[in-house]
View 1 (cartoon, rainbow, N blue to C red):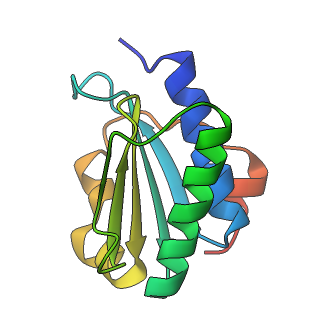
View 2 (view 1 turned 90 degrees about the horizontal axis):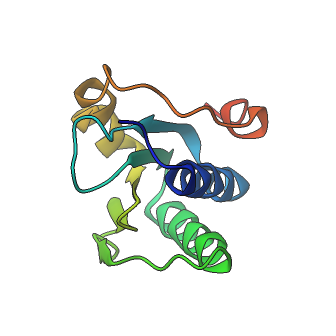
Amino acid sequence: MTATDRAKGLAVAAAEAASDKLAHDIVAYDVSDVFVITDAFVLASAPTDRQVRAIVDGIEERLMELGAKPARREGEQEGRWVLLDYLDIVVHVQHSEEREFYLLEKLWKDCPRIELPETVTGSRV
């Protein structure tokens, strides 16, 4: 099984919105073979709590334009790791320190990446 076209489209839109808000290390994975509850994960990082929140707001605005609303939102109060669950996709926006500590990429290293535009992948590192 592979991620649906809708999930891939939402993942790309979320990644682009994160990039627009200066997120770095943005990646998206097709996790449909290992999870029943979602098709894709998007990961993005920021160096400050305030920027994490701004990225989350930008993603929510962009996906709302596409008719998607998060079913669940967690971690916003602390601003260190915010999870947005859109059912088709799950977005993790992490403070850079949390990203380095938890290394979520290692959990999904065997999952195929969803191709993101150069404007996203060529962004800040």
